Length: 443
Ligand code: PMP
Image 1 (cartoon, rainbow, N blue to C red):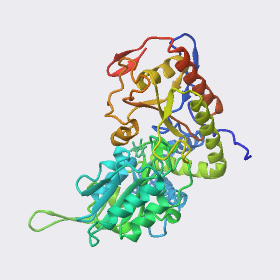
Image 2: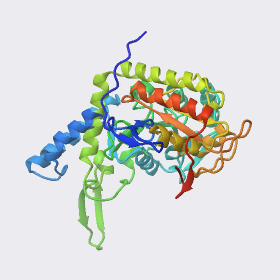
Image 3: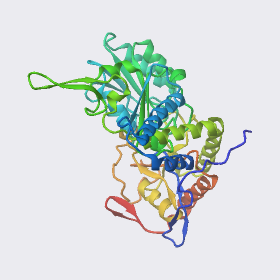
Image 4: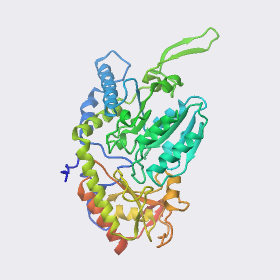
């Protein structure tokens, strides 16, 4: 058996929270899929740089030059981390949502977009101004490829087309067959963008090996919560598009015309889509996280995460009232993201009890993936996180779900505490009563 490495040091491991039942406990952050804690290494790098902060691409002074170098070196580090092609462009954005909206704004005229209904809203919704085909949820990875093949074969073969797909689901954690989907897209003359928000923090991702045209992810899910994200990939569509934001930094030359108007020459480099003063700390922190993960080694990080997944999987399987949500089957390969419902429980009530009585932070709700939750729950879900009456009695359908997620900084104790808390809540019930306040379920 592979040796399991220690969890990587992250911030917040010593945070204690009060329990409603008395006393306090160290907080078990099991909501990495929403936002992961900063790696200690990222925090140290940011702290060491902070006194030297200066404006990027905007000054001859020492600090400005230093910041510019750090920003551009960060770009190269992340390009290397993603194994980009030599002529790819990497744009620092605010987040995955921002990256995908940027690409959506850069689509050539008449572009057709293909997207599975199972996507996170960030990859489902930005394409509304294009001709979008929404593909039904597949039940096996093979069916995903077949569904896409069929949709692409039926398309108008002359115009441009883009497929958008997530690498690992933010709801089920399941891995999607990205390489096969990319091959299908390319065989039909389409391009593909990979939403790696949940994949990049857990697995090495190679743009060249997967053969995807673009990739998007967020710093705050990759242990670098300082407000930056990334879009990287083919330069041609990006260079041909209008700048995502108009402003300084994106423009090479601006002149008044004789008729009184203004002419602009835009940059063709990444700067074209990075108008305004860029978030150098955000970019630098992502690069620091990329280095830290690479140095720790994905082999050992993946082994550790699989060990934690197995603990949760086995623990939940011992509770007959728990149903784990999946498209491809409970044993499908996944990252450390697991959603489930509990018979006889409202999910928000269950999550509130995990927090208030055990100091465990999980997420409840629909995870910004409403059509997917509808498919997984088999009923129209409710959107609010209120307690309501305990519902979903055996045989009834749950209206929302609970998600536990973890990663490189998670110690065994957190998932062990989670598994015993689930068992205790299901057999003994909550020790406290809960009510709805401002739309939230609270003790
Ligand atoms: N895609 C996926 C798969 C996600 O899980 C998320 C965040 N939950 C996003 C996109 C959006 O990321 P952000 O909120 O950082 O823009």
